Amino acid sequence: MSETNNGEATYILGHSDAEILRLQTQAKILRPITERLLRSAGIAPGLRVLDLGCGAGDVAMLAAELVGPSGRVVGIDRNPQVLWMAAERADRAGLQHLSFHQAAAETFVDDTGFDIVVGRYVLIHQTDPVAFLQAAARLAKPGGSMAFHELRMRDECSSVPDVPLWEMIARLLRVAFSSALPHYDAGDRLIEHFGQAGLPEPSLFCETHVWGSADSPYFAWAVDTLRAVLPQLQRLDIIEADFMGIETLETRVRDAVRRARSQVAGVPQICAWTRT
Image (cartoon, rainbow, N blue to C red; front, side):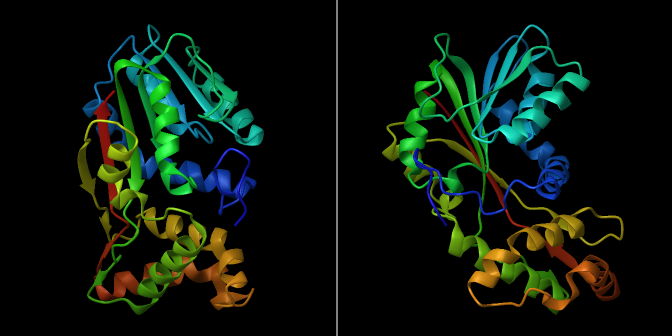
């Protein structure tokens, strides 16, 4: 994995149209947790919010709904392709108080400051999470909130009763991310990273999705994520390009979980927020 000039490692999942669609599916699944984080961080009508690494704009759009037209939301990202889509989506949703800019936290300039600075799944991609948090804190108003939604990828994603196919998918995802992300364990080090950045100790909560129903969107999310990291697994010589018929994998793992009447645990989602 290569590194950009401003300290973020190359995005392991790429920026294809399929990846942007995967991110939108992911956003629907994660929305309730991120909304809880934003409410815990004090979001309210009329506030100014900055979304770091906004991608296709889902967190920024959620924040825009919560602050209302009297507020202001700005999303920044380094990738112009996703920013174009984010702006188009915001325009279709009538969110005139939401704008997007191609920028990094380290270089973005705003003279007013933000009441809440938020990021979802961004610290895991940073080569220096502490420096990133310091750059983000510079953009918050005095007394403003810093809020981050991350993953705890050290945890096992178990199935009970055991479903070997699911267990294999979960292990492969963990290998791919742990081998490619510079700080895949950032979600387990939020107190440490906040402290080293000179920020007050954050409040935290953690939620884990559990599923098994036939109509669950999590099967597609997991398989689409595995499909996106196949190049990394191939670079590690773990799998071949035509790995286990991935085109039918979603159906097969869904059927296996249903036959076993299993409860499947997803990756724990950990959220932290503090005041500057």
